[in-house]
Amino acid sequence: MKKFKILLNSISTIAVIGSLIFVGIQINQSNQVAKATIRQSLNETDMQIYAITMDQPSLAKADYKLKKGKKLNDYEKYQLIKYREYNFRDYDNSFYQYQIGLFEEEAWEAYRRLIKKTFNNDLLYFKMWNENKESFSSSFQKEITELLKEIDLENKK
Image (cartoon, rainbow, N blue to C red; front, top):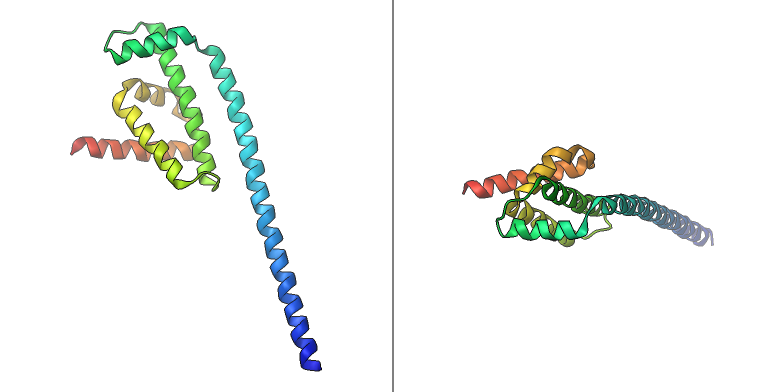
């Protein structure tokens, strides 16, 4: 009988510890989701502000001219650089989501390939990055620095 009570107490203790671990995991996940939600909200606000500064018809024409190799005026360059910064705000937010485990690695790798492609195909991305990199999160700055090193190595081959 005494052994049975000890066994029952042991099982109860293990169950309580398991429950506490489960609650701790749930709280941690809830905190991550709350942080991600706040970050997403801030990102949406940033995007709205940037959208106000963009002249959509001018932006489309400037992008078309750039793809055709035509010369851009200062305003068109400004619009394209602003748009590229706007685009990188989304990348920065996605990288944050990836870092805290709410964005799959496969999805982030797709973004990395897209970012590489943009740097390889459009020098205005370099200009935007060099002028504005300090306005992005430090972890995203490190990620882009690594990515640029990869691009440099690939281009030297």
